[in-house]
View 1 (cartoon, rainbow, N blue to C red):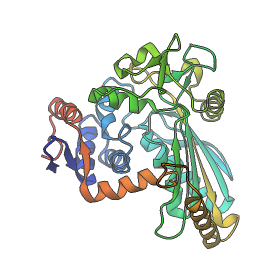
View 2: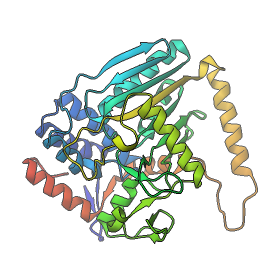
View 3: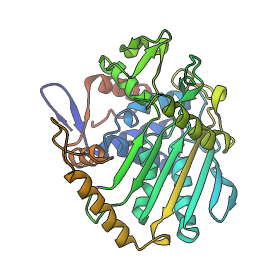
Length: 357
């Protein structure tokens, strides 16, 4: 644990995992499951997904204590064929459900070439790239989609919030030792987790994230309930959010549209969150070494392309997270004072050791 003059404290991934696991065990998660969730949440922070890591812990604990999450679920395959499966998460922690689903997709893709695994009766599972990255370790391409855990987006031209930020992530391997290509995005200009972190830190949002119901810019995150998030690319983002919702919600038998529970405001209701994970075995299409080589050539061409005035570097999707991973692994994950206060309060309520102490 280190502290700077600005009072920002840094912690290693191991310290984060130990604290998170302790918190979950204190409210009934079995030790193995608590550690699995803790590792994924810590990984979210290490890779720079600060709105989806330990920041979410107090909220998760509230929902567990209120009975909204099953701490001892029977996560199981309900339907399957050679290249697909449908997982019933039994209302378990979303991280456990999606880890289970990703492992099934990877295993099936080894023989089927491509495998699509959907999940229902799940919960919020953190950043999308946690799961699209899992097939990378098996020399596969990963694709993850989900129905968000609260509706913050109206249909294009409407004001009733019937859609969520419905995230999409795609991860592709590059050459050995090089950063993979990782697209991790909400279908809104900003994920709602970023709005929540801005509110906790007392920071304003930039214009373009949200508007109120009259169409005026909304920049105060504490007034977020007075408006809604804007879709990426206008009506195209709305269409993409709808399609992802149909694939991950409707197709899986999970919540979609009016049935989506706002887990930010409701600690007691079961969410029935839907996700989908696709694993693509590259060797089924071409030799892995050739694919990696072609990716590297394309990246080199993109980086070498002529730049507009003022642009210092052509960036690749996932570059920021890759750099954050290296930096946070070396220096630790920064915890701002407002988050530390919330975590210290949680530790006192649960009767566990505070983070890093």
